[in-house]
Length: 468
Image (tube, rainbow, N blue to C red; front, side, top):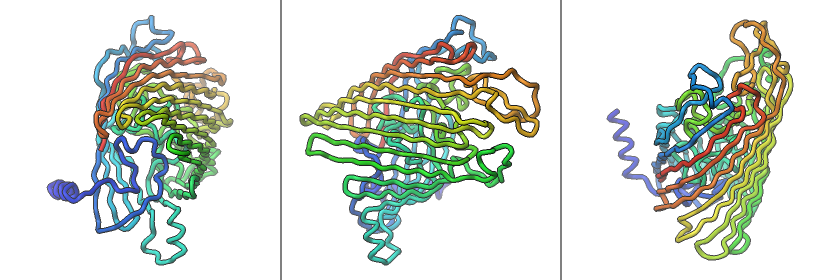
């Protein structure tokens, strides 16, 4: 312990400013997507230490078709009675180490969060903006346009993940929460970003799982896997252009595919939790009820999904800008015990006006909508005498641990969820943000006695964020 304290102290004393190749974790990191190529210099090993802290206040109310019934903790459809209060704060720690000229180690820890209350490693990867240990002119010329990342890292699918809240780091997000269908995971792999003028091409291969394991997969339990852990392939093409001094346009298209990862978590890989604490669960806030207000379509094995994004920022006068960010997404896949594939779609549009000195104030509006097919029990394979059962909340199927009595067949159905949010914020400094939001979210198409039947939540939330 003493050695650890000494090491951290020395690192703090000798650390420099955030290296140019790593995205800043303060206000200057807003609207940064793939890190652009920048000149690098090396004067010896250096460590940069940063952190993020967020403290939400929750004033939400929720209801469903069973709200008139007395609350029953053993029921599957009566909602936890809510009261306004501060929810659990979240914190991140960043360690960025400059190892050689153009070689940086990024290491991030979640110190505290709703889903993992204890310290937890988000991931770590080595980023190569140069390859100084390969003495070839050809390699040097290639690396003038290329960034390579290797390790456990955030999946670079779509552009929405660059604007989301990530545990304690909520400074990039002009709203309180992420999308209803939250695309985020860390996976082991390699990524190459190639920058040619205004275009960026991203190519990545990962293991397709957040928490990979070495056990051989039984093909009978996972028909899509063919008995092996299949990789995931990610690609992106982006055009990002500053047109004069007043207009910036970025248009991107992304895709993600895995033939069968068994435990893929692209739509459920967040280890921190939602900022809409407490809503839409039978039980109160805790590690098992951390993803309030989100919807995971359960496409955890075979998955093909694509996302298109359009970002526009118009600055008509100094210290005033209008920005929009639009997302269109379509996913298709299944879990490891389904026989047929299902679809899920998502659309979202943010409109944000930033104003004041250094654009330190903003107001915003977001509309987000999800439509998804939910599997029925007839679409599931009964494996080795272990019949499938239907989750009482989502209807998503799962495999029973041991043989159980047959359950009545549940037909497949489609659901819709929509959210409207209005926000306002103030950057007290480039490291300190205060924001407030009003939100209303509706659930449609869920069957009777489901917790989401006739459900909605609404109300005010607020958050203080410190990030450096």
